[in-house]
Image (cartoon, one colour):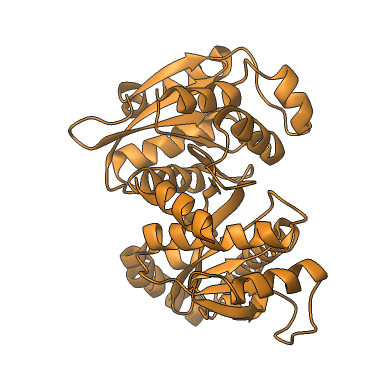
Length: 347
């Protein structure tokens, strides 16, 4: 069941991918179904995994059990599997079966916290890329001073030719329009400085392609990592090597900032009292989401002929729930793929 008349969307969960085991995916699903992590649509889940590992956990979450089907898969992709090995030898794994059901139309999307390289390879093999798109990119929404921005590529393609970076700009614009609701997204290209002489050859050539594009992509120019979070652009394009470093650095800094604040505030009696007041107002009103990196978990493998969302392997249940929420959000944007194809063709 992909959709029904009640706007129910179906999501496949690879229950074997997370570092902490199947309970991460199943408890995450429970948070979504119970409304603790709210989604705009009703969700039906297909859960893929080894029966011996999944069913004992599933039995503890009756709401998930009631709103899902379980598919027993005898194998799982391991964290150290090479993509080529996974393609040849993991065809009965939870990851493979979940993505294969996206291809068949049994489910509308798949969510996995498994091996990124294997996930990309299997997704690309089974689903293929959209017409005119050479390679998929990992894209996600990150916070900025002005709201949010789309960042891609975040690790799928360590080295990118200029033409590929231009395709990412087109894909990112379509994604930003769909997910952020920005009518004419501004595109920036991640670099180590704003000067024309800065950056690698590929970055400089990509700059020229974006600046001189036949259609107006609302190109801002070079963006340094520190500027990306100021909100100077709605889409920040990078090769997968640089983008991944930017992402993981900002996650680490966010965690360190919270740790230092908590440590300093709680070092005195007055600080502990202030923390209790803060929890009772700000965190209760906002769920702490603006300061919680888990609420930004869930990156889309953009450019595929199907919807696949990657969760952090180290995700806990709350983070995995947000990855499910991201999958549901993308499902609801039905014209995004057509827009990407059209714009790439006109580029």
